[in-house]
Image (cartoon, rainbow, N blue to C red):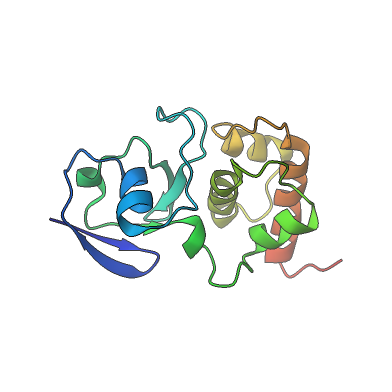
Length: 155
């Protein structure tokens, strides 16, 4: 039995300790916003926050995250009004959209640590997230916009 706090809600889960957090989130808890991409921590589609730090849920066994606080894309904001989510829409970032939950979670973690990131800060923080559609320019633009929104900026 493992106890986790997911998006502020406590869960007691009777699962095998080797089960990856990704599958616990999707198949046991029913939160399907976090996506499976590669299963090897290479693409970033499965990124969630573990005690505020971005992690790849596809390789994190449930036994290693027990007792910790997990935030998924569904828990980033109750109404989709987190500055990163707003900027993603303003800048029309998604193309196919598959990688975007992981991209958004990585971007939100970056902006939590760095309120005004440079291009190189963004590139470094986002280097573990792949987008097969190649929306990297729009992603960088949206992160800069989210930083602006987070500082109270408007258009």
